[in-house]
Image (tube, rainbow, N blue to C red; front, side, top):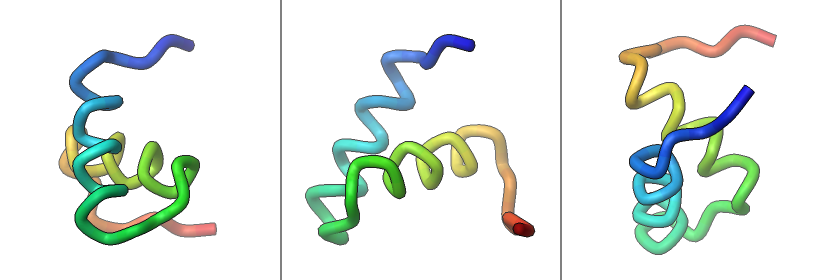
Length: 41
């Protein structure tokens, strides 16, 4: 499974704004781009 450049750019933006770890920002950016509002474990 690949990742889009837009997702990476969004993740970077989130990391800079909120100081999250890279892995967390990838999850967040992916959720935002796919309009996912709830992540269940």
